[in-house]
Amino acid sequence: MKRNGGDTASSFSKGYCSDANIKCVVPFGVYPVARFDLEFPHFRLPSELGCFSLDPSREYVDNRSHLRVYSPPSDGNIAWDLSHGYSVFVQRDESKKEYTDHLLKWIQLHRHHKFPSPTSNNDLSM
Image (cartoon, rainbow, N blue to C red; front, top):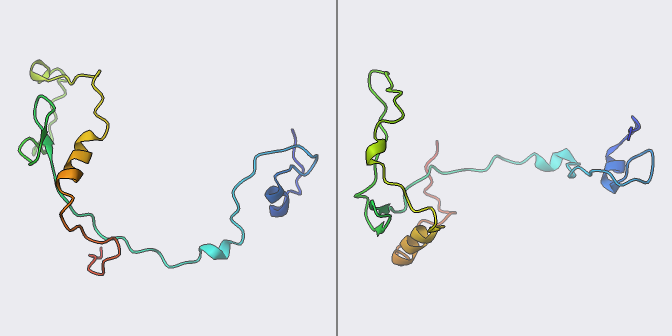
């Protein structure tokens, strides 16, 4: 289908192509553009609310004892042997779906904590 060159914002808002009464793709309305001239919202720096880890058998542990941190090689040389460590790799059971169970368990255990309000005035600025 060939469009006429005279498409305007009003023809798009109706949802019809200008050359016939054929339904076409309707872009979302952005007119008037001035409604987007707002002050940029303030975002605070992320902060840790808590942590948990999973042991080698994928059981919930309410501390950071099994968390690991990646530290790149200091000299910049990367060992590209992808089989390194494969012999000690612990495959998780793909048939058991975990979803967000561990996260929900953490929330349930720590629901008494006072978490910062999303509108608090003590935000850190970047």
